[in-house]
Length: 96
Image (cartoon, rainbow, N blue to C red; front, side, top):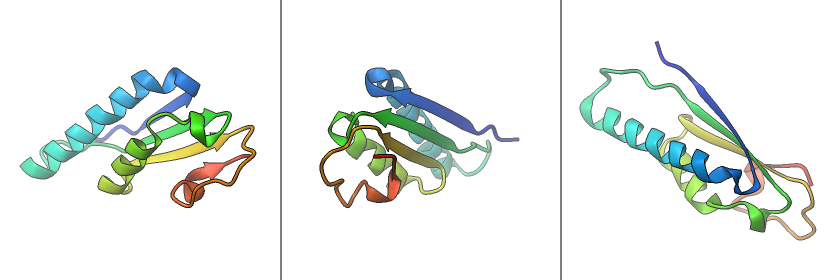
């Protein structure tokens, strides 16, 4: 049976978790190419920062979500955002 993964990061604490996400993406890509011998679970990232400019790897994370819909997901949280949030991030942002 598959195991789902929940990752929680704040600020620069995303660095090791981003590496884990990349590895998960590689495994999902390998699985798609080789058939379903192993069942991989989903990965859900919760990532918080003061504002969207401090969300490191945000474009890369959005790309992984697009490449593996439903398999890799992320909920970004900002605590001190003062400016408009870009349209690309709006569906995935909580807090203000």
